[in-house]
Length: 168
Image (tube, rainbow, N blue to C red; front, top):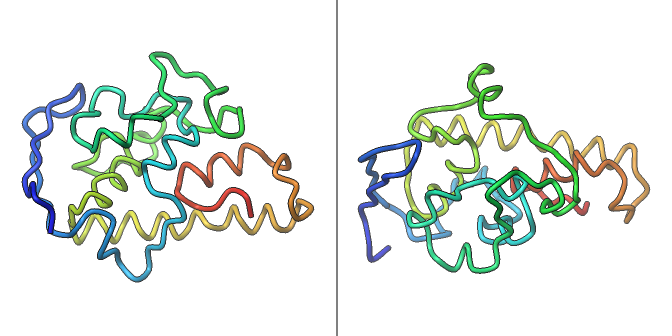
């Protein structure tokens, strides 16, 4: 079990939000949720143009950010595939893809889930969304030669940002 069981969040998007950790870090995931990358690896590879979780690094382990590609301004070159591959938070909000209590979206949920937070209803929704995103892997397999990692870089970047294997 985690040593610290209660997390208190104070950042630009949440004030005095707190949650309990009820699973060991990186363990006891739902059987239907098998992410290919940890949040730390994703941040090190380059996701969200370096502009994600910048003001809430104290919520997560410092080693996640030691080699992370972060930036004060969005920089598509920091992405693993060097391309822009995200929609703004406003678009996510308009489409109903943001679920309280994670105002930054899916990746924030994943980071907190990885840490050990479990919210049964929210977890089901987000895991279903993660599973649905796998369809992009099929599009890459159908349209790219095996091993050609430069084919469909935006889709590959998006897969990485959803913890799927972009190098399929």
